[in-house]
Image (cartoon, rainbow, N blue to C red):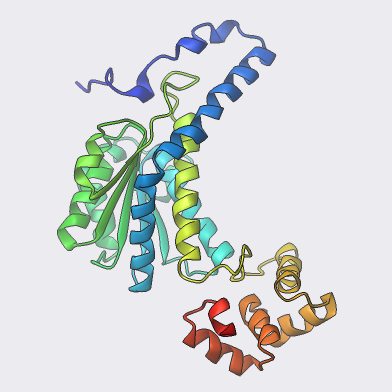
Length: 297
């Protein structure tokens, strides 16, 4: 029998005992009050988030990957963050990977028993040819998911960096990770529904880790996402706007350099700022390891 009584995420919230009797107005306001506790809870664990982020930056610089793994909501949030890194930062889908217990079908339909398998977590990482340059972040609101524990243990075996993200203190998965993060948001608005406050906290922290890590490898200039991939009309226009904001050029100049750079936003910016050809701009970026500001020295 699994004892859930010690988990904060399973406790009843004394503020919502009469939830079924609340009006829509009362329920929405009470839920918002509970949600406001999430950001403060995340603020309290920033000292634990920082070393994880540094580890991810180091992995990227060594040619390694960031791999999230979790079950249910936790797994879906990892998959979401990984997927969004591709268009936002122009990285290949193989650089940030989200694993969910039960595979792709588990994104929309629960796969019975998948999260309870230590071996499945291990096998999913074996299938990715996990190596010592990678960082694996195991995500579990409860902090006890066997799928995650199995993955973290295997990651340790191969020398990969291991981190964990749970929403309970003294979480079981923390014992299986070198860099644990434990964010306690208090009991859920709806008892045990960890897609709510816990899920919000997890998303905030995953966004933080991936975004700041991308900044650390030159994917951002000032506060602009200069490696954005213009995969639709909106993003094409955003790309031109980023070029304008980075260089104070006109729309026409931005459009011309954007096309000359084969729709590579960062390259177009460097071409304008350093008065370079596309070939010269590529050389400058290569020498600067992708950091725009370093091409200006």
